[in-house]
Amino acid sequence: MIETADSALKTPPVLEEDTLRIVPLGGLGEIGRNMAVFEINGKLLIVDCGVLFPEENQPGVDLILPDFSYIQDRLDDVVGVVLTHGHEDHIGAVPYLLRLKQDIPLIGSQLTLALVEAKLQEHRIKPFSFTVTEGQVEQFGPFECEFVAVNHSIPDALAVFIRTAGGTVLHTGDFKMDQLPLDGRITDLRAFARLGQEGVDLYMADSTNADVPGFTTAEREIGPVLEALFGKVKKRIIVASFSSHIHRVQQVLDAAAVHNRKVCFVGRSMVRNMAIAEKLGYLTVPEGILVDLKNVDDMPDDQLVLMSTGSQGEPMAALSRMANGDHRIRVGRGDTVILASSLIPGNENAVFRVINGLMKLGADVVHKGNAKIHVSGHASAGELLYTYNILKPKNAMPVHGETRHLIANGKLAEATGVPAQNVILADDGTVVDLRNGKALVVGAVECGLVYVDGSSVGEITDTDIKDRVILGEEGFISVITVVNRSTGTIVSGPEIHARGFAEDDAVFDEIKPKISQALEEAVTSNKDHTTYQLQQVVRRVVGTWVNRRLRRRPMIVPVVLEA
Image 1 (spheres, rainbow, N blue to C red):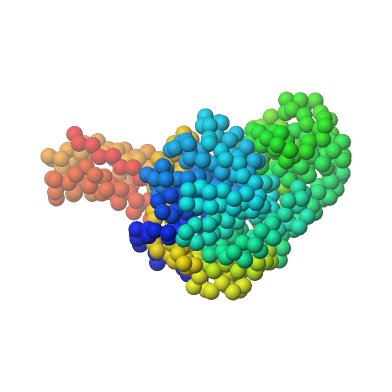
Image 2 (cartoon, one colour):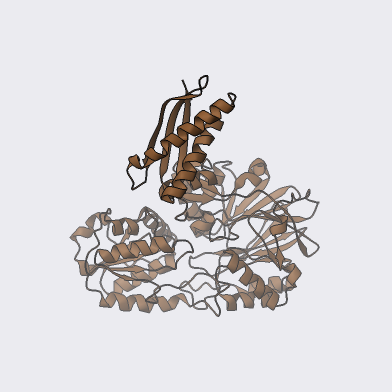
């Protein structure tokens, strides 16, 4: 397998005519933020544009976007954005891209575009949408795109086969090979076989479950488990899932109907997405089963199911607020909470915190660890092997997953006959050129994390995040001193204020003389010391003392004023 670390600082060469360039701007080495840019003969095609949700070590961050800087000056060259399906990690960043240029065409299935259009409406953006279905072939500039049905945990998912003068690429999006899907729509392996016969120069396959042996469990196995659970519970049932997991919501509705329970959708995105799914025919809602949130207090506990967001422990989602006691739904003893989702890596602590909070309130919590109430939406190793054997690609570039997933996918490619030198393990920003059936790493582009923090986009830096972490974990010390540069004496201070310390501020009395001495020596030895240099003297003295005396590394803000 080709490792790409050596190309990290190499600027890619000018793109030659009829050569296809592929640049992933997200989704490699992480679960989320999926985005890939294809370029040939001066035109760009984007596949997916998703968000990544922040981890605990990124306080205050709402969302993380792909880095658009690589294409920001070339948006007029973008012929379209292909959206493989409607999950947030594939469509969530579209509003932020269209803020830069609103008329970039969005290409996707009916449900996918409906979900993204509803999201864009909140941003007051009316997009140019182009609906496609499986089997459809369309020309977008120099890119001929054929769309292939794939099965996933959301209906209407599509893989895209891209034909260009530089070669062909099959990008799966997220997929699995459920042979008995709830909606009857299987991954079209006949189309895969036909494309394999035509020739796949580069295969970009979903890696999320590449390190899981065997085959992903069928969705149909979840329905009976939910029905059995519903039959045992005597009080309220709260089911938490992704707001776009239409299959799971359908199973909850069906189980509720069997046990004569009403269902209430809780969470703005859940209400919005299920209304869209029902309107378009992707969700079948039994007549009279839905109740409004404002009426749930009048419902007997044994006749109610709450279908909620927050299965990943998101702080502002409905379930987290219930666990914290600040939601209008008050969870109590005898209630049963079902987490009908798998853990996204990085969310473990947040989810366990929610589980603990719910159990402390007296609820019984059912999750994937103690019951079979969720199956993955991604192909396991056995399914990926099938696709490699059917397609026989010349080159493979695993996508969508953490490093361990990408490596596992690459090993599957090698095991099925893809030459090791043709398996590319890329990072975000890696530049790959495809020509004459050969894919080569030719360099890398800058590709950082773009943070959304409230209304600001991209203004928060990694340094700001580190400062927030230090403030949260180590505390804060400010030191204010007034010096007379001409006499070299301390006129006032040092005045020390600390936050986040258990100790009284009096503990700092012993360091004040050392600060004064160090400042006086610095001013006396060199009258030309800048204010910044004097502040650094204070920072070093205080930092060394606090680390030795209190075993802490707080944020230190020295202020030196001149009399």
